[in-house]
Image 1 (cartoon, rainbow, N blue to C red):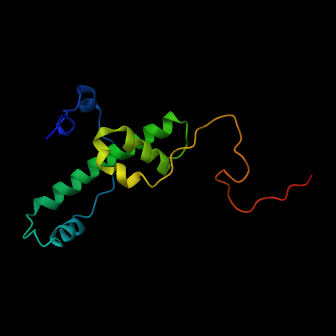
Image 2: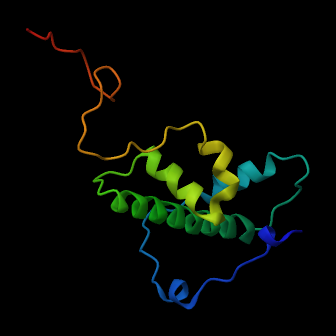
Image 3: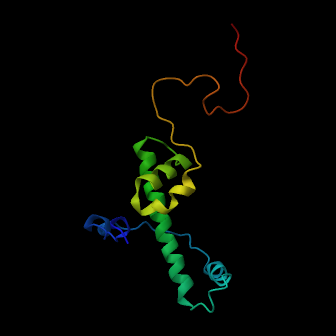
Length: 131
């Protein structure tokens, strides 16, 4: 195990931040079914899928919060796949997802310049230009 694999305990500020109230729960029965689909796993204790569901909730909270932070830093109103990608690449905790998000485009830099015709993320058909 090298230095990058070491556990870094959360700071006191991170521990003091309250978690948002989550109304969505991950389906425990489906988690149990997925776990039992693996041939190496035999019987699953009743509490195990509950713990996995809670861990999944906490993981999703941290990933979504970091994505929202990336969107706020870019003054965006919506969280896009590019914000999610930037959250994964900028947070060491999400390094295992770097290969997965590599296929998504990076965020477009906001500037006063207009993109060249045909290079922007246009929608629909182009209008005919009258000269």
